[in-house]
Length: 241
Image (cartoon, rainbow, N blue to C red; front, top):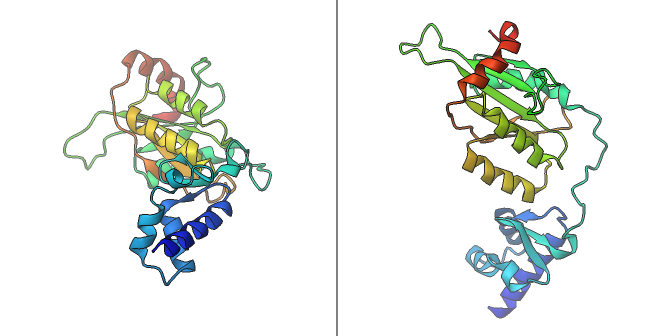
């Protein structure tokens, strides 16, 4: 059994070292099993579940369930393999449509961005409303939904802060960030979004024609400050209603 465990650990290290962004536990298990089919899956699980504790000089966890080799610690390995020339603005319209047709959070959504609100607290990139439909037996109140889109993977905490400020005048707020973002940062943003009720959407920042938006955390509804609702909605009233 010691020989098998040693074999598993060596193979795990080999796989982890070949993935500079880190590798998820389930994916690591799968790869080890493919490489060592003669070893039982339970033995593999029992050997590597705490690999970072067994081999602290070789492996660490930058996020829950993610194994990474220590040689990549503090290194900028998340740089894109190609220069991204696509702008954030290229995603505004497609995300506005996705909010309506796929996520069904809005009955109407429009691109905004820029400094439309002329406020240091910022302007959402996309803003939408959810109004009652004629077919609704019980008519709900109108809801405001705002979203902040970021293509810069090093700017996630800024996006989160902006989305928090949008809750002043929105019933729901979302941040939309690249799938290519560092796993460690995504894990932190994921947890923060669940704590504060912010929605989290991932997308392919290299493909503006088909961004493949994917919901990771759905925004929770809260009651905004109606003073700010009326203040900001007056600015986009003609476009949104």
